[in-house]
View (cartoon, one colour):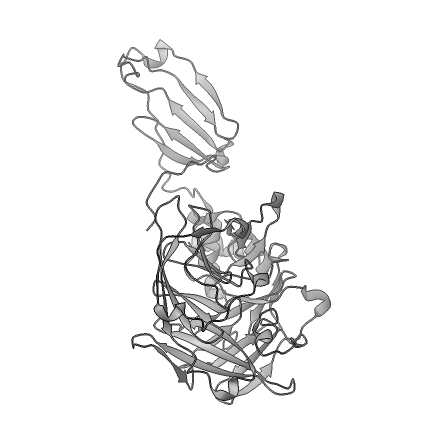
Amino acid sequence: MVASRWTKVMAISGDTALFVGQWSSVSRCVARYGMPGNVIHFLDDDVVDRKGEQRCRGCFGSYDMVHGKTVPLLPTSPELLNGADTPMTWLFASELDVATSWFDLSSDVFRHILSLLPSGDDRMHLSQVCRDLRTAVRQEWRPHLSATAYLAIPNGTIFDYPDYHTKSRHLAEAANYRDAAADGDWLLFYEDNKGLGLLRLFSPFTGRTMLLPSLLGIRACHEPVKIDASLTRGSEQWWDEAETMAVQKLVVCPDDGVVAALVGRLALCSLDSFEWSFSARDRWRRYEDLAFFRGRLYALTSSEDLIAFDYAVPGASDPPRVTRVKRVICGVHNIPPDAMDVVTAHYLVATRAGDDLLMVRRVFPPARREQQRFAVFRARLAEWPGRWVEQRDLGGDTLFVGHQCSRAVAPRPPPGGVRGDEIFFLGDDCLGMAIWADRGRSRPLPSQYHTSVYDMRSRAVTNLQLRELSRDGPALPTWIFFPDDQE
């Protein structure tokens, strides 16, 4: 748990000013009065000075936080005090009946504003102006969302799913994201500003941005780590040096804001420490997916082992560190003989109810003309040893799986709904992974389709959205989802 602390800020807001005094201090939106923001208006109302002597109280001034200058507005004057020994104080008119922000507008007024912006692009840009607008747009826009999921293309186009053929939007801010996207609504960008190699997360739905440190300065932690004895044996494949320090998967832990990334090992960082770290006592493994589930991080290997990680946050200035590594499921006995000679990819996704963890096995056929196959397994973590149990269906839910982001969703009637017990998957999201080298096979040609869907009832694959190589961009598409719990 991160300890509470004070954080210095260099500005407040361009439309907000602080009025501070011994008896009354208030934050006010001053833009509508023609006053500048990022200003602190103060009173010289201290009863005594540092030497304990009585002060003359009669002046006030303003401090400009942007330029760091103090401007005295009124000098000390006996007329202002009127012979009294009482200090000045601020008084403010009641604003109970006045809308001080966009969020304070009535729902009828706000619905009228949104009715003037029928375009999804316009509403998205409106939500990026400030936090009040973002919250208000979310509350008004949410009931009108018809999409179950969204598909982001590197050129900045975002398609609604499953109605991709009729509903899409283009956002310049979402263009040119790199190879990975984080869970949920985040897209991941590599920033090359001044050679710092920073990472940037951006939400095309809310306009939020989160900067993360570069992985070039990742720190090796040598603190003791409790590691399961079975993981110290040489059964796991080692990660190629050429593939290290590239983000395979990135997850933002919702409980404490810790960010976890798979880079051959598990790397952790927090916004307070702004530094990546990994355990030097753990090994490199060939991970395929990562998920946050019930307060722990779980990583899935190419051999279908499920590895659980416990971590701790020592302090605000220290990066989080791994404290325990345990193999909770050994997958070697789960792989059927006929899957040994074919290429498989794996996805890790929590159920919609959040009570179970699922593994999705994707089998690539030897011949291109054959259909891909899927198998879904539920993790029995309450048993020891844990094991994978194959599922015949999804209990009515639908899975959207991808190397970068996966999620379970509820069935919904049309328009925009899915019928359940289906797996929506991406055509090329596994092309860059090392799974092809495992079986000594060359990587296949790019798929003609961005997306396809697998029906668990009929075991049939239906191809959906065709690719447009000249327009889509070089990076791979990814699923993203409207945030469920954004403020």
